[in-house]
Length: 402
Image (cartoon, rainbow, N blue to C red; front, side, top):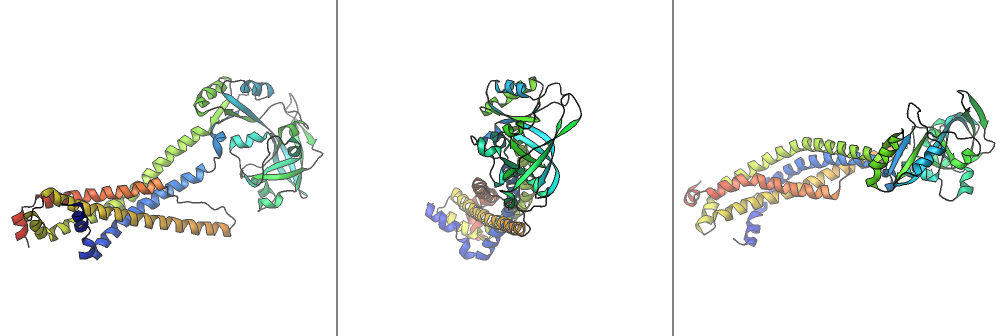
């Protein structure tokens, strides 16, 4: 049988039984759409988490902190030793002091930090307004400060852009050397706000490390970011740092674990959607079986005219695959339509209440291509049994069937 004949005969159901054919495709589409919506939700949740990580520097950095025992501490000497480790590209320490911050006549508790411009890049910190410290601009950076978004909540400022260019002042509480007491250090200058970071849970104001050290002696650092030369050196460098007594965490390990968790979540969501797909496949199987009974006489005529049992099998399977693929396409249209509609409604609500727009449903093109192919496979599987029965019919019995 020629390919053109197979194409004409396997699509004839759109003319002979259009209502039943499109209802079968729609039923398959509903099941496929359920899978698309639920797995798209899993991709969306994963995307929301991963977009918090920016750039390769973040994934190639190790977060080094002082151990609880304080047997070793991060200071200029130990930071210098970390810089000398093999395959370490850079070390960006962070100093922190409790302080009082004054903004437009209001005062509140905060932490004043000292960091290099590269520290923001290594931690993946982003600016929601203004800009962060830039490399090789020491003169400009010395009179500037970067606030966290949590500071704005402290002063009940809703729009981060409104604080850019305004000034703040600080009073630091610095621990006395070899003592549990603290002394108050008033910073005599005001600092211009140049940026607001995306940190919402930590009330902090960050100066450049040279600026902070010009006012107070920094004996120890709170933590440091160790930038590794390449991804394959993360484990060796981490072992070397741990060997020096410090605690180390790597964001790349967290990302790997998060990806595994989201893969499991997507599999679970796909399984729930698969239940609807199975029900749709059963309906499709029933339709193909009914089609077999309706065409039994036609099959007998085709066999007596010279069509082989393999031709009959190909004809039925082709029809099932076409219905399956079309069902997959309809399901993608349904699932993507639902997802984009929900994204639009949520973002509309977020814009009204001052929230951030996010895409809760995400549909990668490879996933949609896989769904289309998978729907064709489901159609193939539901058509195999009716096709075998049709191919096994005796031509004379089939002609006499009523």
